[in-house]
Amino acid sequence: MTIFIQVVLPVILIFMIGYILQRVAKVDIRPISTMAIYVMTPCLVFKTFYETELNSQYSYMVLFSFVLMFLIIFMCKIYTKIRKIDLSTENALILSTAFMNTGNYGTPIILFAYGEAGFQFAISAMVLQSILMNFFGVYYAVKGKAGIRIAMKSVAKMPASYAAILALILNFTQVKIPDNLFGTVDLISDAAIPMVMVILGMQLAMIKWGNFDWANITFSVILRMFISPVLAWVLVSLMPLDPLLGKVLIVSAAMPSAATIVMYAVQFQAQPKLVSSVTLITTLISIPTITILIMILG
Image (cartoon, rainbow, N blue to C red; front, side):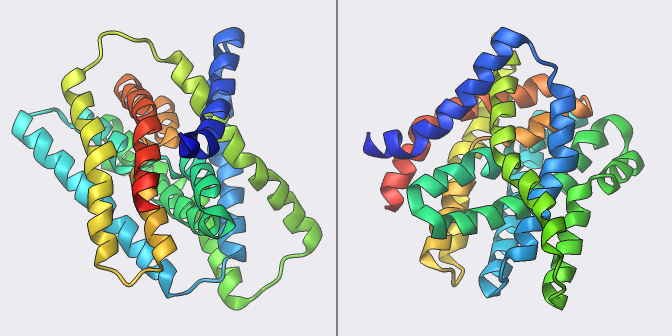
């Protein structure tokens, strides 16, 4: 109970603010999500990679993230092939399971659980996950509706990937940005995580209960909430990772479906009801599962 009160509850309360706001004010989420995707997230990505001192642990983090994502995508494809599910639904299932909510859920959870040291790892993992979502997430969101060529064009329009590339170049070349210019990026990036947390609460308030695709939702929930952290534990055990980083990656892998993916599903009309439904249910289930997992990991 102590872990729930100190770690999970503060995060849930921020979600509730967005939920209540949407229920009362009926705010149009799309322009807000557009601002988060195209302005706030790129600033956070740039700041993190510009300031982070990169080492071998980050190389393993990249390897871990790619392997976990492709394992989950592979499992989705096997499931959809067995059940003879159409491409559009397959892409929605991939969106719902391959990308976890490391940003507006995972980072504050890890901050409360493991302090500043864990939080620095969590921010880097979140940025890496953001880049994966900006590429593969957008690709699968658009692919089923518009085809591969349009999907790749949509990927090319996402600014967070360019922000990461620019920040890494400046980091490796040790080029310093003037403080007054970096201050602008710093201010915007500080607003990114709480803003997207509120957006998630607003999105959850818009989901209507009933007529859920329970078969696909059940598969997605099991894969996202239970199989994913087990896969993460296996991968962590095979890599020479810092023990704290290992815990951060396992907890991150146990997070519910990413809120950003819901934004993409809404933005590109990629079966947003299915994606939102999985996000809602995995978020609710995560309240006890994350608490138990943190207790197990210590």
